[in-house]
Length: 323
Image (tube, rainbow, N blue to C red; front, side, top):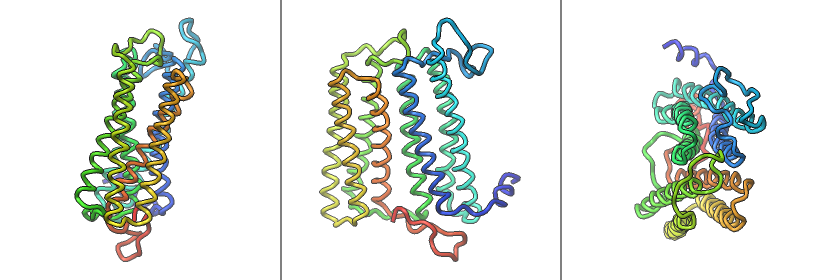
């Protein structure tokens, strides 16, 4: 295959480059979600009213009596960030492909890398649907939730670069594994419930966008209840770590997960008490991405896939970030 021959000519990626590509993917996938929230809270969601063009007949912003220039450039800038996400996704694939060419057993690593460009394509389609349907709340919710899945996958990719591909050996008992699954389910429920609060809230991306017709106080309570569920499961998981005498690395990641989740909960409470100010909305989205990263990191730290291979099977492991 021609592409494989071209990639094979590249130098074998260093440990730093492998980590850097995955970290860039986490930042890019999470960042596009945060900038999307800025578009929403500034009412810029339809400032580029067509897709994929900004205006009919123009890919770039033009003066228009119905749209403020600032709002148009905010929406256009968010679209342009997709280009950065594409480049980072391509870098992840090239790096993983180069590793796979020397180590064909690393199919899982390459498959995870390919989820990055696949996600970009999916997000482009969802983004177009969001614009063409006039920012219907459920399309905006799907757009955001797709970003959360990609942030999770990018975090798993980061760990995949630094671990082997043997079947996972869990560092917690079966009950602990079940609790981790429950933790992820609770996190997913919290995120979905959060999108319903956003759908009924004041920041729809445009003043004429129809909102979710549901009592927002009830939606907020459901969202809060899901976060409490997440924290309860996290606490019970901590008891399992005590039971098995978990190592320092796993405890450290567990502690970071608690700190980030509590900070996010406090920020959400403050946001609600202050009437959902625009600045806190974007910070809350950033906090959600941080909770996803820490939860995914805790998941990965709870199992061992063996050491990562180096430049050749005979060399010492080049990476061991999850051990």
